[in-house]
Every structure is written in structure tokens, then in C-alpha cells.
Amino acid sequence: MLTRIALGLTVLTCFAVPSAISAQSFSVTFPKELSSQPLDGRLLLLLSTDPSDEPRNQIDDTPRTQMVFGLTVDGWQSSQPAVVDAGATGYPIRSLKDVPPGEYIMQAVLNKYETFHRSDGKTVKLHPDMGEGQHWNISPGNLYSKPRKIVVAPNAAPISVALTEVIPPIKPPADTKYIRHIRIQSQVLTKFWGRPMFIGAAILVPDGFDEHPNARFPLIIFHDHFVDDFDGFRTTPPDPNLKPDYSERFHLAGYNRIQQEEAYKFYQQWTSPNFPRVLIVKLQHANPYYDDSYAVNSANVGPYGDAIENELIPAIEKQFRGLGAGWARFVYGGSTGGWESLAVQVFYPDHYNGAFAACPDPVDFHAYMTIDLYDDKNAFFLEGAHKRVPQPAMRDYLGHTLITTQDNNQYELALGDHGRSGEQFDIWQAVYGPVGDDGYPKQIFDKQTGDIDHSVADYWHQHYDLEAILERNWATLGPKLAGKIHIYVGSDDTYFLNDAVYRMEDFLKSTKDPAYGGEVTYGPRAEHCWNGDPTLPNAYSRLHYNTQYLPKILERIKETAPPGADLTSWRY
Image (tube, one colour):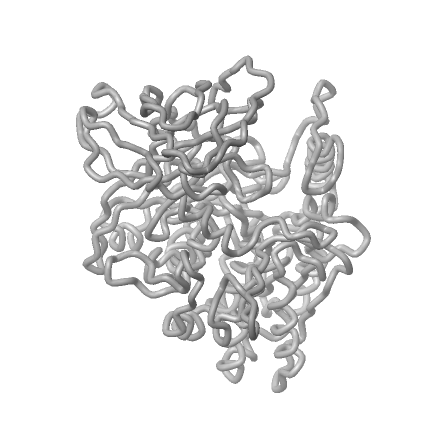
């Protein structure tokens, strides 16, 4: 766990002055004791007016964000200062020359890169995940400076910054009675990346797992972003001394207590006498581009689909006694996990017997959030006869724009060039796109101008547009997918993900011989990530994935299990 640094500051002020001033610059060094070898990476200079936390924990894509200015360093020597000046890429203020003079809390972080010599002949420099899920501010081994108060002033001398601290390693979680762990070296990923690559999972085993050694269990994959352990499961009552927090997302006081209450209720259900005995698995497949791989094969990210399906899941089923058959496997998840659930059901149709996809990432690139990648010319603006309208990337529950597509991509540019931000648009581009001449993902649109490259969009359409793939291949996929597709989304999804679902629904409703036989359901006025429960708000239903779909899963098993299938050993 990282130690929070108490700054003892109260109110910081910024004073407006004329903008025609020389930019404040920063001279950054690191001691030789931390690395005798030259370093590669993204150097991030952070400025904050909020003393409540370290600046490195205050950078995001919301209106609350503080400032970041990024610069790529290659072969950086300890004896050679790196200068962050007006040329660094900034967000939300684009250049240090535009930062108002005044008092700030300053911090710097080096997100370290490693050189990968891939099997496709490309050499790239990327940040390897270190067990934290691709979060540069907490990634073990990254260097950072202690936060300190500074004054930015017109025509001031460069401010010296020393990266004297190293983020410590993360201790792997221990196995418990109910939560077990597995980590394997993937042969196909190791070959692709040119160095050892590992994938893993946290497995929730049923009550009585150890006492019933002859039982074999259905397997459920809960696709999600990176988790270091199985979350949402608590064997003890809520902490009576827990200080209530406030959830900005759900506008709820004490949401941390609600989460503990629901996690404990799930434990009580999980261990009750008549609860279905199944394995629920959360995968760990963080990679050099993002906190997960989207669970498919990709020219840039590597063959994660095959690694998960052909290496990791068989290892899980062997060690934890899964039934090991497609009729007994299911997938569900929300957002990224929603897209992954639908994608693996489509790309590996015989491996699973049903997918429950909540608020999935865009399933039709005609509705890539608010962008039509095939017909629009620009990703940032709706082009009119004599005006350009900025396109939103995120809205609140009242429809207010929280960030535009252009700003969201500026945020990513500050964190990393060549698609190395570790953020959303960059991972979509890495997973769905072809490899560029430089070895990094080829841009779907110019992150400075927003101009769309329709040749890249055509590649996306052929390989990862799920609606297009289903429509093109329904004659062969339809018989394998009938009754397996379930999609849920709020009609006011925060990221406009409902728009693509509308298009997917139109196609699915048109299917014949066979009809798709599943469901597409909308939550009226529901934001991200509505998962199909009309009786509860998102704040609660999002905590019930592991119980919500079980009745449908059990009914599906009953209807489709082949003759002689084991339907009893796991119903103790």
C-alpha cells in the first residue's frame, strides 16, 4: 500500500495575469542510485491546486482533474536533466505557457518503458504491467518526486525536481477458503512479445469445494477491468467504524458502506444451502497497452483470445474441477466486460452457452460513442455547412457534457504518445487496429485534428465490428448463437453506448433461420452501466452481477445439457 504524504496545506491561490509571458519550465533529474542504466518512459509533470492528495492521484478525464504535462524520454541518464517546458503536451491546459502564475503543488512521475522485440519483427517501447493494472501513478518501479509547494511566476528560472522515490512492489493476495488464484506463463503471448508474459485469474469457489472432491462445476467468466483479487465478496459484516464516503457517480452518501453490505449479503447467499455451486472467475490480463486485453486476438496487443481460451481456462478447469464443456460455460460483464462477453461468445461460439453483456463498449462502429467511423470525416466535430459542433464523450445523468471527444484524446496525448496512454481510446485503437509502420497501433483518427482514417476504419469493420461480423456470418454463426445473446444498456448511458446497441438490436430482430432468440433490454433514464435489473438503480444492481443472471444460466443448462451430462455432482 502506498503511503499518503500529508502536505499540511490549506488554500492555494492562482492569480490571473496577462498571458504573454515566458513559460515556467522544470528541470527533472533522478539519482544514479535508483538506476545506473539509462531510462526510457513518459515523464509526467503534475500541478495541482488541491491539497487533499498527491497530484499523481488527481489526474483523470473528469472536470475535477488537475494538470499534467507529458514528455517522452529515451536513454535518459541520471546526470542529464530532462526539461519539461512549453513544448510538453498538457491536459487540461495544453501548454505550460498557459498556466496562470500562482501557487501550486508540484510532483513529477516517470512511467518507465521496457523495450519489446515482438515476433512480428517490430520493436516497441511500452510500460509493462507490474501487477497494478496499468495505472502509472501506482505502478511498482516507477519513479516519482515528493510533492512540494511551488510558485509559478512570469519569466522565472527553471524549477528543479528530483525523482527520489520508487513505487514499491505489490504483494500478491493470499488464497482463502473461497477465493483462490492462478497465474500461468502464456506460451503464445511469450512468443508474441519476445519475453515471458503471464496471465491469471481470481476464482471464487463454491461453498463445500474442498469437502466435495468429486464434484465438477459449471464455469462463469465475469469479464471486468483489471482486479488484483475477487472483489464484491465479503465474509464479515460491514465495518462499524467505516467512515462514510460520498459517491459522485451515484450521488449517494455512504456508498462504501453499501458496497460492504452488498458484498456480505452475497457471501451469505453464496454459502446458503440451496445456492447453485459454480465457479466464478475474474481474469487478469493486463498488458503493455491497458488494464485488460479485450480478451481477443489482436495485431498490436497479441493473441490474448487464444491465450485465455486455450491456455488459461483449461488450466482453471483442471485445477478447480470445472466441467470443461461449452454447455457448462457462461460469460457476463459490463462496459469493457460487456463487449468482451459478447465478443468471446461470437469469436468462440462453441466455448460458451450464453453471454450477458451489460452496457457494452461500442458493438457497431457506426455508433462509436457519438462518432460514425465509416461516414463521418472527423471524430471531434459534427461538421455543418458553416460551423463545427464539438462532440461529447461523456455526459452526466442530466445530459450535461463532462468531457468532449477532443479533450478526452488530449488527456491521452498528455499521458503518452504512440497510443501509450493506457487509456480508453488508445486501447480500442490497439485492439481493433492494424500495426503502423513504426510498430505502434495505426491511428483510427488523428489525435490532434480528429480526422478519421477510413482505411483503418475498414480494418476495424472487418475484424472487430461485432454487429457487422454477425450480419456477415449469421448463416454459420446463427445456429451456434441462438438463445445465447443477452444485451442490457441504459437509454442514457454516460458514454452513449446505447446508440450502438440500438443498431445491434435492429439486426438481431431481423434474424431468421434461426432467429437469435435472446434479449435486448433498455433501462429508461439509466446511466452507465445498467445491467438489466428494472427494480434497482445502477448503484445497487451493479453489485449483483454474480446473482442476477444465475436463474437464466441454470435454465439454459437445463434446456441444453447433452444426454449424460453431469447435472448432479455440483448440486449438493
